[in-house]
Length: 115
Image (cartoon, rainbow, N blue to C red):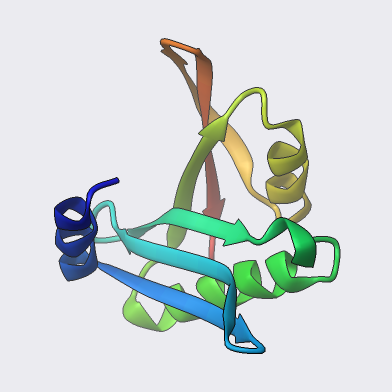
């Protein structure tokens, strides 16, 4: 991603970062897909800090942040080969509603109703 692309994304999305010892260890962002749907475009935890509950906390934070903004559901996408991510999202009640062919395999789209 170029700096210009990141700057453009920052004008239409909210970004959140978690720091530990002056290092960013996790990031998340969401924007609006439509009036009722928040789109989680980024969710990442540094590999050294995984399996500590940080990703779970980040997911709950993003959900709680979306609700008061009037969103009734969230969407996100991942690669179909990222089975660890698919299992993680399912743990939070997200379900696959779309599978889309890509040059490297498939993308899967998840959704969750917030109400």
